[in-house]
Amino acid sequence: MFAKIYAKLASLSLGIWLMAGVIVLLAIGSFSGGGAESSSINDMALFAWLKGAPLAWSWWLWLTMAFLAVLVVNTLLCSIESLRGKFGRTNFLSLIAPQVMHAGFLFIVLAHLFSAYGGLKGIIQVNDGQIIGFPDGTGVAVTNIRGEQGAMGMLTDYRAEIRDNSGNAIGGISPNHPFFYKEFGLYIKDVQLFPQRIALIEIHREPGAGFALAGALLFTVGNLVLLATRRGR
Image (cartoon, rainbow, N blue to C red; front, side, top):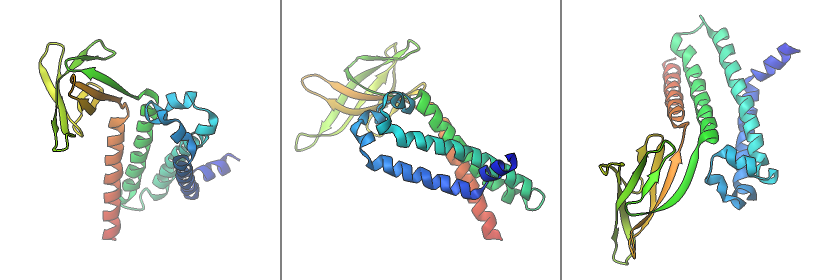
């Protein structure tokens, strides 16, 4: 009984069916009304949203996570079986490249898990010189909010300076150029210059960002090595 369950969990066909299932569920979620009707899914950590979302809106996400959990087990067992079956029968690069890709996938899943649990996303409006406080008691001030207006009077560019508690300039912030303070990212979304200078700042915390980067690099390296070894053959 255990051997049959293990064989099914370690099978490549199961992995393919699980990936297909994840794609279908994500497509359903993208085009269904659940996420769209509750736009807050984009404004908070995933697990926080799931805790308060009705099942009618979130069922596809729960199923997706269940599929991914089984896919993680399938990936681990596939790697074990691959190493057991090919060890000593092929060269090192051909043996290890698929496992590096598997490790990359697992790191990416772990990254999303961390961000889903401990991530943060919020938007605040700050006046010029106002301090944004952080949980550790420190803070940064958003100063020198400015922008450039085009011929039609619309803002074509805007930016601000970031200063520490002592008033020292420690960086700048502009569209597509966020400022990172410890584990938080600050993004400027819009500014108002009159009657007073105000900036709309989006604050992110992504605990899984490092794991996601590591996973992407591992997956890419494993892919390139695998393609190189197969091309050589």
